[in-house]
Length: 243
Image 1 (cartoon, rainbow, N blue to C red):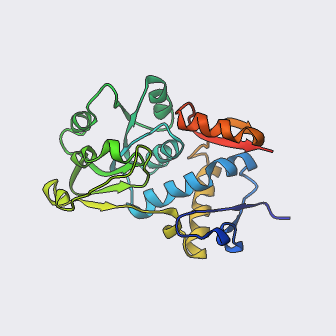
Image 2: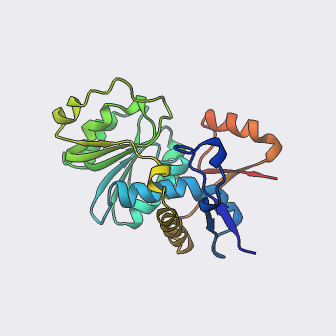
């Protein structure tokens, strides 16, 4: 009788383990099925990025690439809730408004502006404690110039392609930076970590600190079109397929 959600993090899991019983978490009454469908992977990714990969606290300065995207919207809201100064990059004025509505304090239009120069201007030359980058190839290595010495570069996605031929010496040249490539599978590999991560997400959504935008719904038979629209960047927020 319990409402449950499967959390499937493909990285590190074989085909035979796509839906193992230990990946089930209970959905509290305060969370709708549509919210759960639209938030589990993205929201749990945001949870570990903000609370474990780098511990964002009041006064932290963070840069979010693709701030109007599905993960980006959650990251911006949650980081704002934690008291961070949130800077986000977007590709259009429309997406800029979405980012602002989701807690982004400073919006940079990367197609029209040099995002490194704008970050330097916004922070008064102090730069960011951490950069969260789900874009990959197109924003590297420029993202490193947005980070203060001893800061952290988190590359968690490859929307524009993977970062290739990485020379570790560049981290020293840019200020003894740290760099990590995390995955949800690793951060929720134990049952205890999975449940804690999910429950933390449920808590901030239930309290209204983070709102889940299910902006696009498609019939399950139209899944191919949903993928085409996603690849063409015609969507924002979460996409849910309905039976």
